[in-house]
Image (cartoon, rainbow, N blue to C red; front, side, top):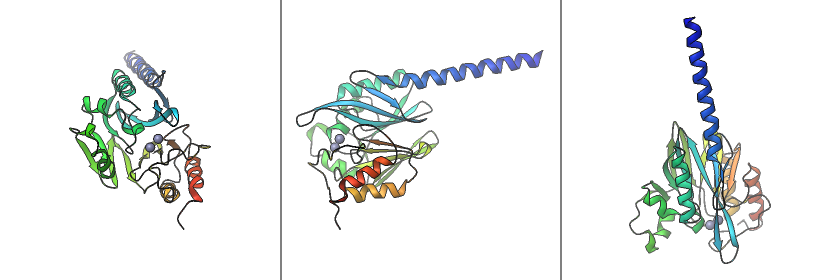
Length: 252
Ligand SMILES: [Zn+2]
Ligand SMILES: [Zn+2]
């Protein structure tokens, strides 16, 4: 009788725990006009927001969120402060604490919502290359940036995310992120969705682009999730596509 009661208590607890897990996974995904969040693997999410541009019209822009044990690391801010506020509030209202934001290069689609993160006192990690460019802009006076040169390792729960500079491509400062547990890569605008054109080349190094992406592919040949700066996420084929797209321009 006693054993049976213990068994039923444990069983109810398990039922509650599993229901909570399912609910929270579903609620973290969102699909509103200004912000989308899509779950790609156990801890890896893609955030999508929209940037109004002169040359390309309204552009959908991606970022990555790694969520584990109710903590989140975010890669690239949503495109503007309004969508950044939506993302921050959405995570907080679901009981998720944001432990860092990592803009992966200096363009608007990575830093456009930065002041909302500053307001919430969320640590901002940028490379010294990105800092050198942002420093010239008065709007970043008063920001406390946590900086790194070529590599940064951030912890989330008991796991690590490796942020690395592999070379120039879309810009001279573009970095990528790799979350080992899910084998997921955030390529940012250095990585193209399959079928994409070369996009904005204003600050690009088209001669180095293929070499830089090849380095990432050799380092993480088994990546399961690859998120580009714009368009659909996929897997390793996004790296292959990008390498091929810029190959003819590669310095020999
Ligand atoms: Zn860019
Ligand atoms: Zn971009």
